[in-house]
Length: 332
Image (tube, rainbow, N blue to C red; front, side, top):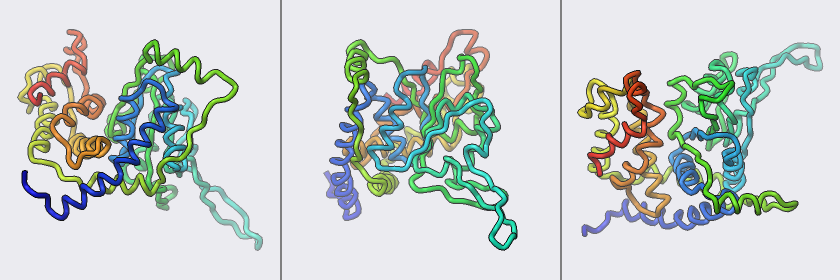
C-alpha cells in the first residue's frame, strides 16, 4: 500500500474527527425516529452533500417528525410551511410592504418569509400550484431570492426538506421537472415493520415524550460539507458514475431497455449529485474516499426522479425500479 500524502493525511484526520460526531448524530436521531434507518441515512447524506431532499410517502410515516428532529439535533433554525392549493409565492419568499416614516415619507420594507431559515420544511409540497412550487427554484439552486429587483441571501447552511404525498392521491400537482432536478435525492418512505410499529405505539402515545436535544452545531455541519468536497474520488468511481448517468439517457444509451422505455433521462446535475452523495456516504461510514459500491447503493435515490418512463413502459408494466436495476447491473 502506498503511503498517503500530506493532504490525504489531513483529510483522513478530518474524517476521523467528524466520524464520532456523525455516529452520535445517527444514534441520537434513531432515538426519536423508529425503523427508518435507510431514510435517515439518505437524509443525512443529502445534508452532508449540501443538497435538498424530497421525501415521498403516504401521510403518517413520520416524515414531518424526521425533519423536526433534524432541526433540533443540528441546532439549526428551521421553519415549516404547509403547502396548500391557495398558497402564494409571497407566502414563502416574503413581500414588500409600504410603511410611513415619522416625517410622513413613505418607504418599502421587506418582510422575510419562512424561506429565510437554515432548514425549510416544505410539507406536502405537491399540494401547492406549480406557480408556488416554482418559487423555490432560485432559492434551492442559488441560495438567494430576488424580490422587486433586490437580492436577499439566505442563511447558511440552507436546505429544503420537502415531503410529498403519492401523486395518485386527490388534490396533488406534479412537480415541474426543473424543480425535481434541484432535489439531490428522492427518498421513498415506506411502512414500518410490525415490531417498529409496536414501539411507535408504546413510546409516542403517553403523556410524556422525550424531546431531541442538540448534538451538532451548524458550524459542525458546514465543516462536514466542506470536507465532503475535499475528499478524493478514484477514476474507477468517476467512470462508474459517468456510465450510470449517461446510460440513463435514451438515444445514446448502450442499454436497450433505456432506449425503449425511457422518454427522458438524467442530465449533468445527476452526475454532480452522485459524486457529492458518494463522498458523503463514505464520510458517514468513516471512510476517506467512496467506492463503486456507494454508486450502486445511491443509484435509485439519485436517478429515479430525474428520469421518466415512456408510454411503452407503462403499457408493458415496466417500472423505474426495473430500469435502474438494469443500469446498475453492469457495475455490480
